[in-house]
Length: 305
Image 1 (tube, rainbow, N blue to C red):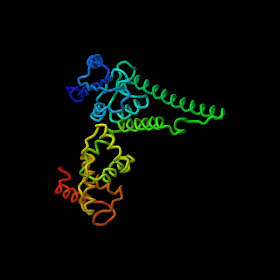
Image 2: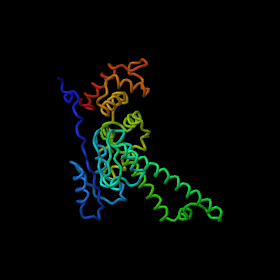
Image 3: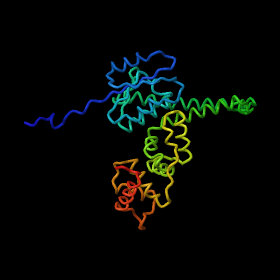
Image 4: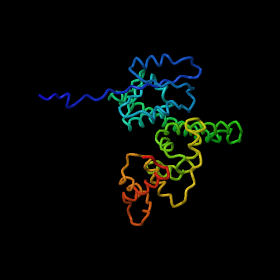
């Protein structure tokens, strides 16, 4: 008789990976670590920094390294996210990659139906919060107008330096918050391609994957990540100068490096979608043309596989 368990082996156990964050004012985070270990976490990543800080290099690297089937575990929601909106963005990104999330002291566990319901309630609360803030802002502006007052920040209207500095600092914090939250979707590709490849090629490859970068915006983003010590300064080095006729070779090499699993036919299809004219004429790229450019790129040391 055939052993059914042999034909259908049980799935591998989920990896529980903990994340603990403590303020720089705290002495130790032993309590969080103890709870995470008691919950079954075999790996625990610890970060020190204030809750107001947007720079969390340990969390950024952890989110990038998580793989499908992993479960990210925290003691409380505020250990992971700075706001409800940030929390939902992180969880949504994890779910698209097959990674689950669990908070030990909150009813959030995206691997269970009950936990997903709690998450949906949290999303509804966040949406309501945004609507209430917008309504209060609108009502406040109408009341101020009825009293003959000008809406907005009086310090900004009067061009007070301290008000301008405060607004500028708030915008910079929000900008860094957005970069850190999205870094795992674009920074790995930049690390793979820079500085061997030009910013133009990196932007084209990223945008082919659904992003909406310009060279100026991407360079500014990488500059900021370097300044916060979240990226290597080498990414900003000048790329080697190469003759214009090597443009196609660099582009093909960049596509192959960004996704080594692509076949020659896949790369040809991407070049067609980018509307790059084939090197020897014709309307469509052929795998043989891609292979020739990859061989040339290997001779120049652009690719090593």
